[in-house]
Length: 338
Length: 299
View 1 (spheres, each protein chain N blue to C red):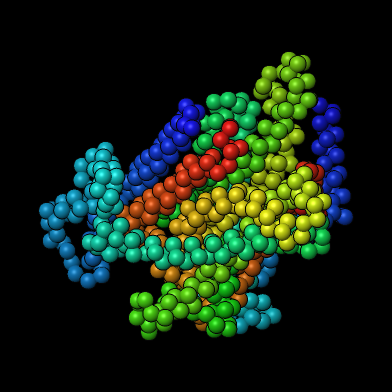
View 2 (cartoon, chains in turn green, cyan; view 1 turned 120 degrees about the horizontal axis):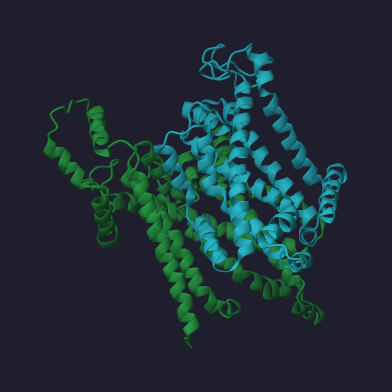
């Protein structure tokens, strides 16, 4: 049944979502425009350097043409409105400097699958490891194993991914050359749906994903453990034990099931963060994902691309959050009543 | 008032007894951090002695790429700088930036959390919504973009980092205020005619101190992770060699591929030590001041 309260709830969530996106978009736009220096003359200087030619004769028309292409004509407000229209109505993020004249969305579209594949898999694997080990550790609460694992997890889960990635590259790629240090597949295989390519992709993804798995598994372990301990104090668990159910059944049907609901929300949340948390690790491995693209764009002062990537990250994260906010009350009646 | 003082004194006694016979994890964290901070404080003297008055970033003081030896515990780099002295300098700047940014962020957090938590109602919902949106927005790419386009000095860098790390301490402190303001002694203060400002300052804030400490540690960790991240790709002030910038220099030189592992290993290990020690301290702090947690951590 749809009540007034539900409509109000959905309305407020969507309103906050739209306002946040709009504010983030506007702040980002004005911030990037307020930076001194004209991107077009910078771009022309770059062309001059790259091809070692003098473009002193660059005419006013050419500059005007470029300015039009990059959406830099008129005053700030005109630019803002035209950018707004271009992004939200035509889904066009503008041309990139990095790969002129290809538009930013093409660059992103080429990089995005790599990031999503790498991070999606890594996040999922660490989630599964964390849930299982967290339940077991919680089950053994108060034991030696529990306290040792708990402290280790607290320490490990706060180490930034990129530092672990540095260690992994150093030891597993250079000291013992077990894994390749860079890129997403070997240059000798032809991209396509063949076994050689797929195995090469997995082989190259091992180290970067390991740096995420090794750290975020511990994060999942901590949260699952505390959920498990809460569940262990519930009456129904005592009843289940009194009934004489087997341990494996209690673990599986009574604890894991109950821990899964909040942890699935957490998973959805961190999947939203996929394009986000991993910029530097991708860069360390020169992995052809969004992170490497962002660092390249920042180094090349390509602000259409920078803006595009940040917008996409904000959009994915906020959308994932909105979906959770809207779906969660359907799953969990306790939220609905609030 | 005297009752609160004794509360704080009690906690300080608890702290010092924890330092002597507390859980191993907490003591380890505290002493690792103490050691690192001492190193950082002694940096000017040590480097002055080792480098005979020169700066650790000065080029060509020594022959290039010397292997580790007694005079140069970590060898020298491709510009003839002593790597060990550079680590000390890097450690000093990393800690300074972390403390500054963390301190500013915590200050902001205390102001926001106290207003929000105590006034409640509409003010609370608006401030809480803002805090939550900043927590959700991917801040690292924005931070990278800012650092790439704006020239910064140490103070500005700290302020920028603080601008992105205040939500964590805000959450910790606000949650605590919400629980503290329901306590009987706050009701008593209300009945005896104190206004909300006085209650906030004299009744709640003193009891909030340990949680401000926890928030501070979280803010330092957040700020340092972000700082190292942006220095790692060469952004930020180039004349302030923090550990992250050292990593950038030696990664750019190709230290790993050429086998000069100590160049990358040393700053990375120092950073990990800092993060781990702060974390261990945090666990310990939460445990002393939040005895209910004891059941959960089982320590």
